[in-house]
Image 1 (tube, rainbow, N blue to C red):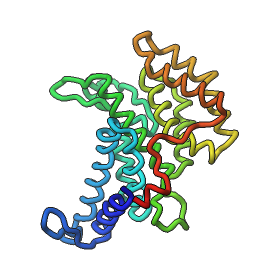
Image 2 (image 1 turned 120 degrees about the horizontal axis):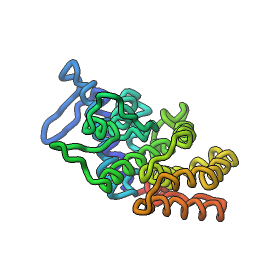
Image 3 (image 1 turned 45 degrees about the vertical axis):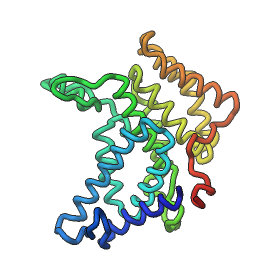
Image 4 (image 1 turned 180 degrees about the horizontal axis):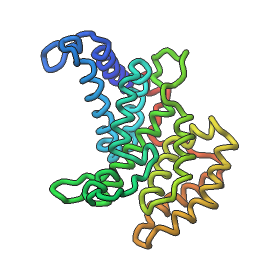
Length: 262
């Protein structure tokens, strides 16, 4: 509910602003320790990324309430936004976007960690689980860049707005595609913020969509084996529907004005 989200936002904002906040029966304040504020910014940013790779990866709709709170906090407390991006880029290098290359002397285990895989006791996580986590983080990022906290001061620009999404997309299309990963990331990103990008960039955005369909998808196909076609098929279907209809649908779960009255 909108009222619940406001409570969460106010509590986080009060904590970061140095006011005492009640938690587990006691009042805590960042002023209680010289590094209190820095610690809270770090842990909060880390928590938002964990929401992306956990909650959002399983419940796509949850990207929007989480993103709108982070967007508002980022506006008032830029340090949280900076640290959030650092955590996000480390956990999901594709959010830069960046495909790390294996350097000489780097062990396979270390390289897999650089690619975003979780490695425990030399055991690498399953590909499906890896893709799900990356998907959740990209969806959260795509939601953040288009949302603003509705009760904030709208005078300034969005701290990390749609221009960053436009840049992400352009840089993504300049990279050589990877099997599985590239198709999934593009689909997640376009499903979540394609509608907002169309409104902002119009004809330029449609030119990019045509480029993806005509030139980039064949390049993804060239590196994709028959067993990895799932994400690619979904991307092709999505592109075809959008280009035929000449519109990108609003993402499922977007927060409508009526949400804030709940």
